[in-house]
Length: 288
Ligand SMILES: NC(=O)c1ccc[n+]([C@@H]2O[C@H](COP(=O)([O-])OP(=O)(O)OC[C@H]3O[C@@H](n4cnc5c(N)ncnc54)[C@H](OP(=O)(O)O)[C@@H]3O)[C@@H](O)[C@H]2O)c1
Image (cartoon, rainbow, N blue to C red; front, side):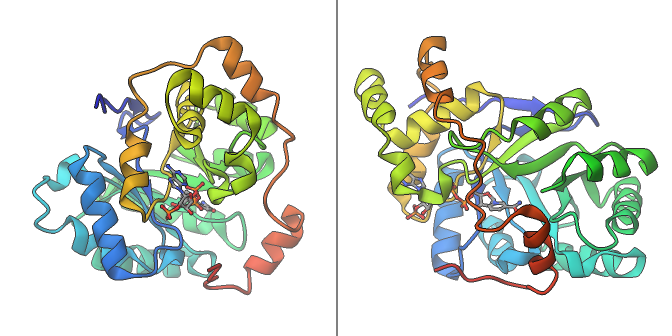
């Protein structure tokens, strides 16, 4: 297997592996640790977690004595919106460091564009200056939120983590990010495992043509779009599949065919303003 994972340079000079493993809805400690250990064994060096996912402690345990140096592993976490504000954000970051049991975090994101995100951003910048966070960024920010941050920022956000998969390219916000050299991190890269997406005729066809699974075709499509991805997989065979996408290339013609599935349609069941309003009252969602 050629698992030479590309490294992407961020606008602050730090580097991030383009493929990682996501930790959303990884509630069980044993599964979480087993997935991370398998990912590390296969050469994955990027883990995406969040306070909201309630598994930072498991991530910390998984990377302890794992045989890979801390400096080789890129850890992202996200602070939740009830942790925004000058005092609350500092406390939140200290808790993340403690839960992950690390001296520094590679990337910390503001999870949602709600509440006092300007106050929170200023605290992230202080922690970057202190070296306890290497890079700082955003998640689920739209054009107005990005511009508000850019207007007050000492450091530009290095990434914005947004929903993206073949049904939703999120093109408008992607343009804004590109213009400002903010890298594109795609959440739900496999549509959160949506069977309809994975069973689209085009992926069945390309699967045969390239001798890869539909999930591998979709992940390779993301890689060629220059998205940073971290599919979640608790099934160890899925993790093995997901890293085995660097020995083939999808032709431009086939990329265009996949692009034609785009409907700019989110999996969110409510419009973004209502979603943000609901998020204000939610600390944790259990989808399964
Ligand atoms: N910033 C945000 O607001 C936000 C929101 C959502 C997610 N995220 C981040 O993005 C990551 C990815 O999103 P996600 O976990 O929600 O969804 P996803 O990665 O698109 O899909 C995960 C689902 O796909 C399945 N899967 C994984 N590899 C597969 C394969 N090779 N073949 C078939 N099925 C496969 C998994 O099954 P098994 O578990 O059974 O292997 C799981 O059910 C999250 O874990 C999280 O880190 C961020």
